[in-house]
Image 1 (spheres, helix red, strand yellow):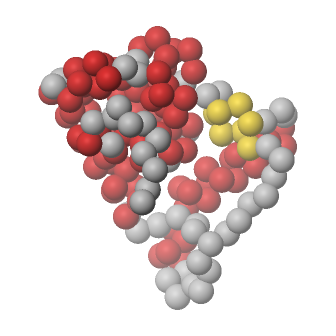
Image 2: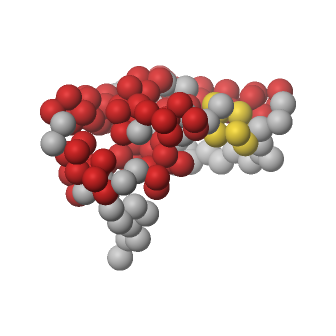
Image 3: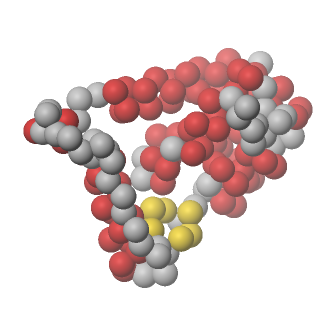
Length: 140
């Protein structure tokens, strides 16, 4: 059985967990408005949806499930993410018969964005840029 990280999260909003765990938010700011709607103060303080979600009250989650503007934005972002993940990638088109299933990248630091401070300097930023590029190219 899969553990629910946020037990107060209504089933209708469960996809917020997937959006928060998809680190694409560190370089694609398309979802910033959605996270700001969830909790403006927490978003401005952290810029990190994963650290924001545990602090959202049950009442706020309930309000969001009744907010048509929020639900429309959530639906839009889910569709954008689905399209991003399913679109033909540069890697897949260039190497359609590749046996490569996964690439692992090991580093002591990854500079993905200010909301995820796992870096100290230039090499961390470079490692983060490699991850972002691999994602955008569709490298598994």
